[in-house]
Image (spheres, rainbow, N blue to C red):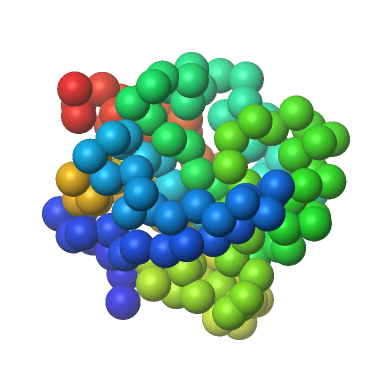
Length: 153
């Protein structure tokens, strides 16, 4: 079932590229959260999107914003990719149970075994305030993320 605008975001705990557990609910009351699901590390469109987040998404540096990216890749693949590309934001592993968090957000492609390109902006109270889901080959527009965060104040 897909998560819709106005829903409470499903909580999750996943390990980042350093093996550190990250729990969405720990950010409630503290940060607006941008959750970006992507299919696979090291792939062309995914690399382009995450490099754009690194280079042209200044909101990720704000004290009141957390950027969390999620794929079914392992923690080890994320660590290698983050080191190679200089990603400082969280690359979270939805490796096992395979795709469980992507499923809970309604962005898991069962045939391919990977997440689609889903982005969710979650406010400090844990409510989804904006979302976009693109087909796997279609990149997202980062300016939309900035606009959605600006509307949260």
